[in-house]
Image (cartoon, rainbow, N blue to C red; front, side, top):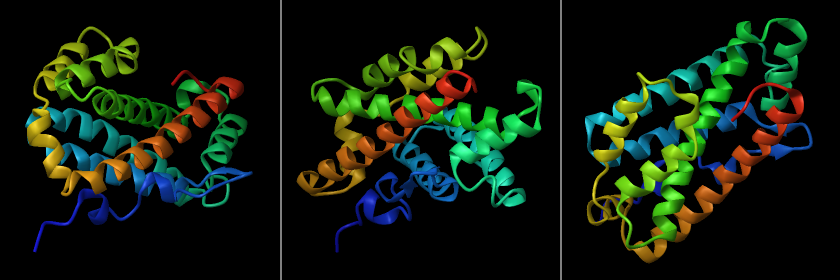
Length: 202
């Protein structure tokens, strides 16, 4: 009996996140993001704990807001609007800040995997370094950047990583592509929402 594929083991995919006219469902989004964190377990290197902890911490803050505000926190859009309406100072909007950093982390992850998929001869360390430079780097200070560059160097080889997603690859890679597209669509949508609402830059 072969090992189940990664996408069979996760409990919520980005392809299953409910998106309506009201916006992106917060609970679904948090579930899918929590499952994304598990992909770094396949990297098999403790250097990625920093990435995982960052994502997990921000998911927890968004979840905490939803737990206290089930109605106004129902979608990412309503959460942002509600905090803006009720908390005058931007720096005091905990859930908005957490969501901003969570989306930045998701953008970094999705770009790294997309670069890797689109460039079959490129090792993950190169794909994720390019991704970092095109996403999180501009938001990080001089103390944080070296930690992330160290994590990029610790990426596994393609030949090690992709089989861990499951076999056969002909089944797994289309699932990875669909998952990534759904994730990137959500990030792009929220980038627009943040820009239009003056909530910050993703």
